[in-house]
Each structure stands twice: as C-alpha cells, then as structure tokens.
Length: 90
Image 1 (tube, rainbow, N blue to C red):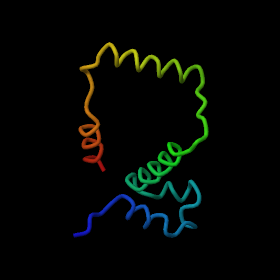
Image 2: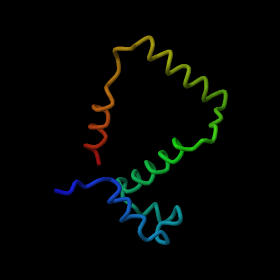
Image 3: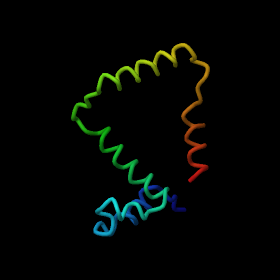
C-alpha cells in the first residue's frame, strides 16, 4: 500500500520548474499547492545556518506572546489538534 505524501504533490508541482519560476505563475496554483511550496521554503529556512536577525518590534511581539503564554498556560491547543484543524481545510 502506497501512502501519498506532500512530497508527491510537490514533485508534480515542481517537475516543470519553468512553469512555476515566477510569482505570477505561482499565483495560478491552488491554495493547497501554495502551502506545499511555503512549507518547503520554511523548512529550508529552518535548516539554514544563517542567523535570523529580529527587529526590536519583532522581539517585543515575541516577548509579549511568551508572557501571554506564561500567564495562560492552560489556554492552548496541542499541535496535533491545530494541525488536524488546518488539514481539514485543505
């Protein structure tokens, strides 16, 4: 039994790179296809050794979110639930 993965669809999308080498062509993709591309870009960013420099505003926002989380530790959803919700909309 073969399990279909996001990489199968990604391969199909990117197999013809000339078709999707511009933002205008990418705009023609479905939302699900665009998400696959964004996921791949995000994964490449995470695996990069390059330092990510945050602005003061970004640091303040992150600090605010951590503070909010620390004040409301029970007001969260597990990743599995969030992921399931997102996938139900694809």
